Structure formats: C-alpha cells, structure tokens
Image (cartoon, rainbow over all chains, first blue to last red; front, top):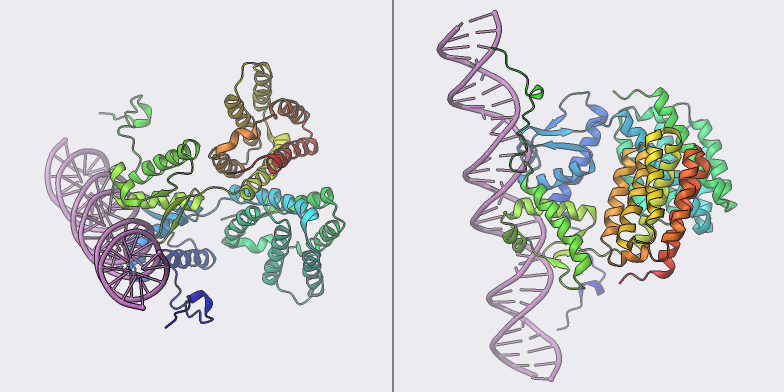
Length: 233
Length: 233
DNA sequence: TCGTGGTTTTTGGTATACCATACGCCAGAC
DNA sequence: GTCTGGCGTATGGTATACCAAAAACCACGA
C-alpha cells in the first residue's frame, strides 16, 4: 500500500482544537482580556494573580507565566517579584512618543511606497479614501477609527518594509487599548479626509518628498491634538 | 531615639549578591554568548539545548526557558517545538529593513533635537565629531564603529524620545551581532566625518528640515552601500 | 543495496511541589 | 494610644518530574 505524504492530500483536517500551544492560547486570551479590561473596567482590579488565572484558564502556571512574561516584555503588564502582576496604564507621555514613532515610520513607508507601490496598492488607497468620503454622513466614529487605521496600514504595506509594519502594528495595538481613544477621532474626521486625499495624490505622483512630508505632518498634527486636548486618566 | 530614614544615611550597602533573578542573569549570559558566537564561531553549532544549558549554568530549566523565550521574542533565537532552539541569522533583507527603520527614527530624532536639544547636548555632539576627526590616523575601524554608534545615540538622546532610543538600541544590538559588520565601516569613515559635521551644523542652526534630511540621507546611504556591496553569509 | 516498519532517544511543553520574600495582622510594651 | 517586633499568609521565583511528538536508529526483508 502506498501512503501519500500528508502535504499531497487535500484533507488538511489539521486545525482541530486550535493546534496552538497552551502558552500561545493563554497569551491571546490574556491580551484580549486586558484590552477589554482597559475599555470596560474603571480603575478597578489592576492586579492579576497567577494562581487565580491558572485556575480560570484550566492550565498550569507554567505556560501561563510564559504568556505573562511575554506581555510584560511588550509592556502591557508589569511583573513585580513577590508583589503581583499589574496591568500597565500608558502615560500621556508614552502615548505621545508612540505617535511620534508612528509618524517617523509611516512617513518613511510613504517615501518607500512612492518607489515600490504597485498600481493595485495605489488603487486600494484610492478606494479607502473614496469610500470614506462617501460614507461621511452615515459613518460612526468607531467605524472611522477602523477605516482610519486601515488606510494607514495600507500605506505602510505599500512601503514593503515588514519591520515597519510589525512595529506599527504593535503601536496600533497599544493605542487601541487606550480608553479615551475616541478623542483621537474627535473633530478630526473632516480634516483627515482632506489630508488623506492629498497623501494619495502625492503617492500616485510618486512624489516621495511630498508624500513623506504630508504623512509626517498629518500624524504629528494628531500628536499635537492629543498633547493639547487629551487628558489620560 | 530618632531613627533616620535610610535614604538620609550614606551607607547604601545594598547591591549585595547581584540582586538579579536567575532568569535575568541567564538572559544576559545567553545574550552575550550568542553575540560572541556570531562573531567567532563559523557556521558551527547553531543549535542550543535547554538541558545542556541548564547544566552549564547550574540553574534549572525553568528560568532558562523564560530567558530563552525572551530571546525568541526579540528575534535572536527561534524556538521550534520538539525540534530545538536555533540561533537566528538575520537575512540581508532583514538587515536592510533594520537600517531603514533606523533612518526613519533617527531622522525624526534629529528633527526633535532641533527643538529640544540643550546646549550641552549640542556641545557633546560637537566633541564627538571633533575628537573623531583628529584621531583620523590612529583610529582603528573597531573604535570607529563604537564612536559612530555613540554619535548616533547622542543625536537620538538629544531628541528626547525614549521610545525611539529603545527601538534603536534594539536595532544596534542586532547589527552588532552581524559578522561582517566591519563592512559597514569599509570606505565610509571619511565620508561619515563630512556627513556628521554637516549634521551637527544643522542641529546647531536648529534647522529641523535640513537636519532630518541629512540624517536620513546619511543612513539611507549606508543602507544602499550594504545592499550593493555586502553579502551576508 | 535499498527501503520499510517499529522502537528508542531526544527535546521542547506542561504540571506540580517547594522556596523565599514582601506585606499585613496582632499582641505586647512603653 | 501608639509603636514595635514576631509570625502567618500571599505571591512570584525555582526546581523537578512527566508527557508527547519528532527524529534518529536499527533490524529485517525484498
């Protein structure tokens, strides 16, 4: 009897039970939980307990600790020996720095995109801006935020630098975890549409200097807005 | 009797026994070991073994695994379930991306520095460039590399954005771990001195646009040099 | 000689027990 | 009443034993 290599069949029964390791699953679950916590809970219970979490998830402390250690390194929690595990609240200063880094990276991505973006990618950007302008009345702020992120991610993707994408995704995640993130959008939607339109025009013209400058100014303007009007807890 | 607060005494006996956790010590040791390995060893032994390391360090697998997990997340090693732990070799593409990110962040730091750098910081930059020009004959490439990094770190510091500093330090570390990193310096020292001098001038003139552009072009030029002439393994 | 099947070994993943220290409670002295 | 010191408890850190899957090895047969 001949047994075919698994890769040659079309079965792929595989994904049963989410083939991820317990550590990975605990990590995702905790990440999601912390994010929700930041949105819903108010000031209460900033502390986590390894044994308690271990019991809730039904796994031992070992994989849980590995997941927590990773979250600690990413800056979402802070582990203090023999004291506890605390959910980290970003300070306003840290948020401003994140936006600054974002501005630096995305403006570089825009520059790269002027050289390397495909026609398809430019078309996609055009679509994102257009769709956005048309929805103007009906759209909710929440949708705007998602669409907004999508637009910026599309620029970054068009720059073809995976590392920029990775770092920015991390930044975006931390932003998402901020409670008053709605402030990011407050009174900025109209202005953003204009900015976005101009940015796409510069990209289509392959004008690197202008595209870079527009993206940088656009994001730094958000930074200033947050610095001036947002009060973080 | 009056007992003085500890902070008012001048004892500070504290640092007994390197208060670091075993995990932290294992992490530092492994990091250093991997770095040396990348420099000295040739293609041999890209694989690590948890039990073996555990025996060598004299600690159990648990803290060792946590240290390895952290190195894995930082991209220095890759842990594959039931296969082994492998020291990661950066591809040429990844190196180019790191330099690109560096260019984006340091140019932004230069922009910020034009607004926020103190006179002392500008003076320090001046010193770094001057000292460097004078040593021209006697200096070794190795020293150049260190001085070079120092110069760039000084600019980043002057930008007052801690996050940019953190990310760049990570990038610099990975660069240091590259074997043929001497190529970075090959035939570039003379040009660098000119570049650095101009950059400092722009900073002292508080000319953000020029400083940003010069820093970006300087680093992207290094990127192109690597892309063209460096062959990574 | 080559391939084929099972068995042993290796190796990272997980569970669990124990350790050491920071904190809180409470009794006792002044 | 307040401060002090011991002692118990909570909690992250560490050690160790076991598990499962992948790889390596080996014997056997065509």
